[in-house]
Image (tube, rainbow, N blue to C red; front, side):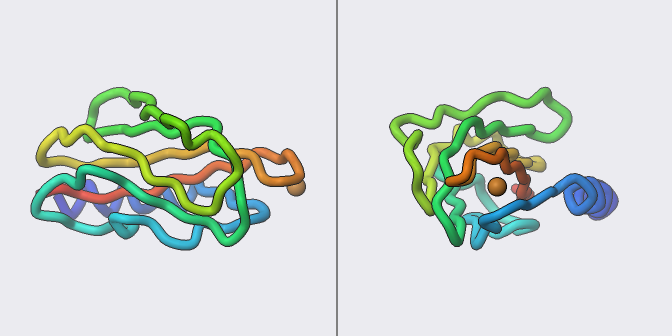
Length: 113
Ligand SMILES: [Cu+2]
């Protein structure tokens, strides 16, 4: 567990490229270790962005896209339902557009024990 977490953390720190509006806060918090999987994930930005895509990589499984529902307009906070998959590592990747049309991407992750 600890080794996996360390490797993932390095991967995330190395790949995150924030431009424009930085991600403010995520629920669960980045690198949180939880007793149970959350039913929703939430993430927020200092300035409005428009989400293009959010996906979930669960442990060693391939990425699957998450349903954005009606959250496709410019906003500062997004809240998406999460299908609980049990114990493992959840990496949430997002891609969005800033107000000026530039693409922004990022990731955050948490672990369910
Ligand atoms: Cu720009």
